[in-house]
Length: 235
Ligand SMILES: [Zn+2]
Ligand SMILES: [Zn+2]
Image (cartoon, rainbow, N blue to C red):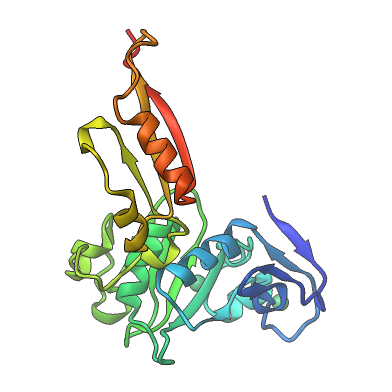
């Protein structure tokens, strides 16, 4: 599925990306084709890496331009599925393509590749299968990886790549097993945006969670948004 935009369309597709950023750079003034998943995933990448900017060096390419820059008439740039990008951190420095590749993997891009010898430019596309390449232009290692973290030796827990900035709200799931919760302390921590309660379990209405009523009234008192579930095991 793709959308087609007039050459002079400058409307925003998502918070940080407009149609004009995906324009073909052949010099012509033809339409721009964009798969809507591309700006959506770029937006998620922007947040996952806590970028100050992502510059699209090349987005949509008409078949003629694609051939002129070394591609084919049918590659993912000509379909509106792909972008070659450089990501900038909050200090305005380029983020390593190694980190960008890891984050692009987390975001769910189908095609990912480092495309320059200094690890600053990254190709991403929204094909449905996975095709991930790393060191091709650096060491002529043409192998495909299924995990950029291990490929580049970046520990997943290192904090090198953070998806925390993409989190919109944090919640806790509690029941009587957490005991009598000090909800004033929960509120004061500033780390909990909502709570979900086990209201009860099994098929008997008498099996109400022993802390449910209190957890509910405490959260209401402290204006903590709540929801609840009834725990059961299908048999
Ligand atoms: Zn063109
Ligand atoms: Zn590309």
